[in-house]
Image 1 (tube, helix red, strand yellow):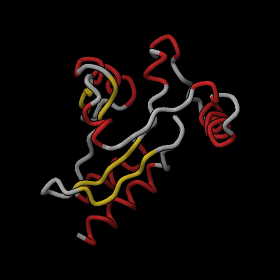
Image 2 (tube, helix red, strand yellow):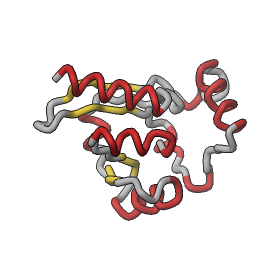
Image 3 (tube, helix red, strand yellow):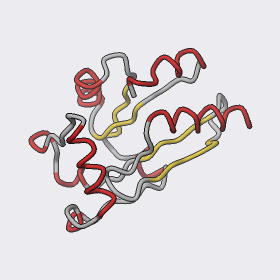
Image 4 (cartoon, helix red, strand yellow):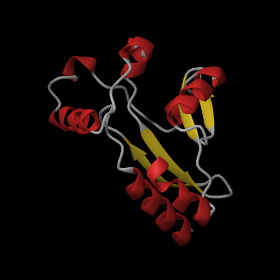
Length: 135
């Protein structure tokens, strides 16, 4: 996200991250990864369920080609899964991203099919800009 923070700021698109766990855990996570981010805990998975996100079959962690490729890209960039801080049931949650307008209407949504299935941040920024200019 850091690579497009300035573009989001200039465009006045507010960014919020909804993360697994309590508000305290969300804030701890964001402090480690992007101290300027605004993070919201989703301990009861209300947002996860409302977005219609699905769980991943963890028996396919090593055999889903797209996930293996994404994991290799992330590791080459210096990012790794922190398994010590990951509950196994949380690892099964697929990611998602949504663009909401000022009235709370969902303009665009991405539902990941595996734990690494989120478009690059630049692409998410372009999708948000596009969706909000169409509104």
